Length: 233
Image (cartoon, rainbow, N blue to C red; front, side, top):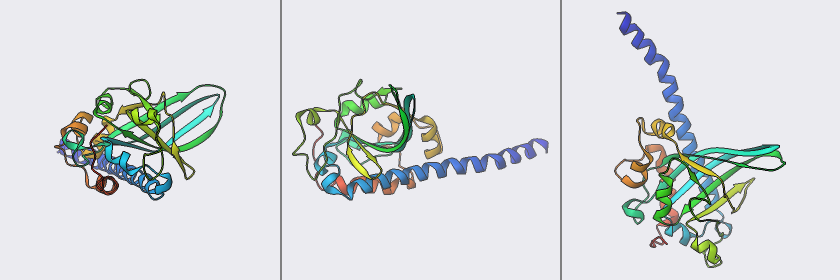
């Protein structure tokens, strides 16, 4: 009887924690969807549709906090979603990722910024599977062009493996993110899927169904990239 009572009490204490974790992931997925929707609602200043259609993965990290008190540092969490079928199929299941990185020099201030990353070929996927992926060091990175098409993109932008964008205080632009570090988050994936799931199985496998909370974000990516189905660069 004592063991049964202990089990019941333990499960009763764990249930609110599990529910809170799931709610946190649901809210973050909705934040990511809202960030992407806001960007695409302004096509003249958003991500070119043809570049989005060429990308094999998209990373969305909403609300990255940066606090600079003498030395600066940033931290945030979000998701990476890759296409199935080696980059040519529909969008797959999201994998949790964290972003961190310092900026050095005498500084003072606080910022809250949304980031969107386009991974333009499969080399970027392989880098994402590392324990730590440093943007600009482990793969060629450039600030992404904005507008209805990519016709105004520079040679450096078109040659980049990763294109980076940011949105802060409603303003959206390409941004250089050299030195920022991406790490797969096993804890976020466990909260999102209810079990331990490796980033590799989500980004390359194509066999794990996305959670219901991810459907609005996946549908949004499909909406803005399905019209022009192009091969990755």
